[in-house]
Image (cartoon, rainbow, N blue to C red):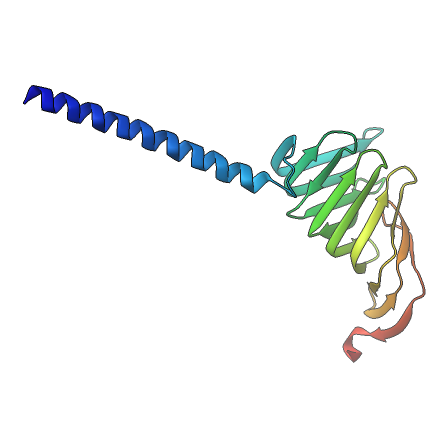
Length: 188
């Protein structure tokens, strides 16, 4: 009877160890598959990002993202596959513009950040908004631009469509390319 008890306990112990290792391996596999982006794994991954950038002691930008992945190598880049929010600040340390997008990618070599899908930029001080599907932030030249259709909504309710726009990186000054179809919001 004692011999049977020891065999049963050993078998039960081995079974528990096996289940434990199988469970761990499956969790790790699922977790790795979730990080896999187009067959590539990030070198660094962060969640719930909140970053503040300053220039000469003054806050210039704040960046918020649910996730940020960094890929090193010859063409290093970072992306925010769950969206991004950037707030730019003026010299008075007050918000000047807010940009949101469903996806963003920043390439280190070219010093550009591209935001895609449901991109909305609002000039907080003027009350103007630009909506588009893609913008590029050229960090070297400190400008933001788009070469796809944009919808401009001015603070007075006037709406127009354009073929893109050009702006300074704080979105304090901008021009819409080939604006047309100007209507008041209540006319729509």
